[in-house]
Length: 444
Image (tube, rainbow, N blue to C red; front, side, top):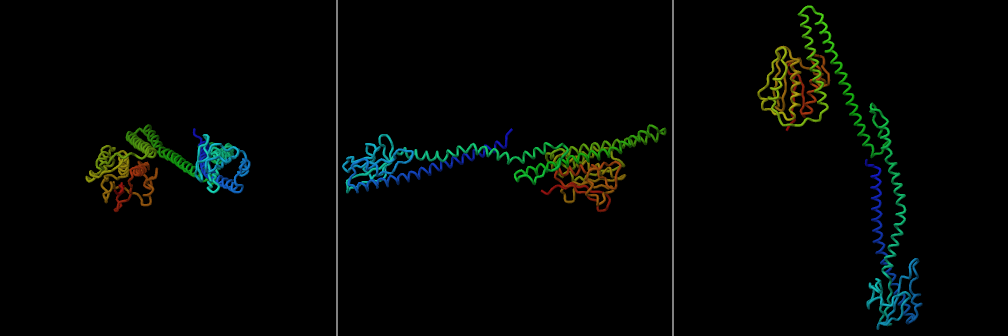
């Protein structure tokens, strides 16, 4: 398992180390350039000082005089500067202690670099034609590099010693910074499965609040799903109780009836109750499947006339001589989307219209007036205007309750329409002679 604390620790330490290394490289380059300039200036000043002494004393014959003219010894290093005085005719007049016997520079004025006895030197030369001398003052380049390296080590050594302390403080700070996450995890672990109270995000840092809000939204969805399941269970139990009680009553009547007519009537009522119970269970299963599955796949476009012809052919026998008419124009109307979902929506509208149809009524399937959908027009009692917005709710049957209705048909239709991306429009006919249920496709 990847640790966020460990990952942040390594990222911070690596980033800080990279910054320190970059700073060290910058200091090294800058210090070396600056030190080179300072030491070159020192060479020039030392050469001028020795040259001035040569002017003052005509020609120093002793080594001690040259040594006294050079700058004092740098603490921790041997004397850096060495001096030679040469005559213009090539004779070594004098040199300081520690200066090599070989010539420090060629016959050029100013700065020059030269390998003397296998060691690189930096030399400044002053040529005086009046006194016929050349004053050469130089120092070893290796010592210069040693000075720069010691300077960098002196700067980085404390940083390296502080690095463990930095790592310890970083680890502790990360632990303190991640404490709200551990507290939230501890609180969630202490809850039982029924506790869906939202987390208090006001006390959490701004970076953790989005996680808390997302968890609270998830809790709301889970609680809504559980409440929905409880409602479905309660409604189903209530709706099943009536037909089951009727089954038992009619069975008792048939068993006790001596009159064949009474017994046949009781058996007919038993069949009606069985049909109603079967339809309720089937619609409950369909509703559960619709709400549980993801959006149905789009498998092309389907002719509305073909779908409706199949629904009418496979529908149960129509009661009370109900007639069904399918407009031939629907043969050319394409319904895009999942075929099974379209069949489910159209079949439920068709069955709902038949179950509320008076004897000899007509259910007519045709295109919507704008040609953007399909609609069913029946000759049933219609729906009161104030209930049109409520009839798609689960188990809602309104004032005109039917003994054969379950209150789920239009709910299933509404969910299927949303899955298909079409609009379900329910309205009463203008002449108050029935209901219109239209599926309106979105505009291209």
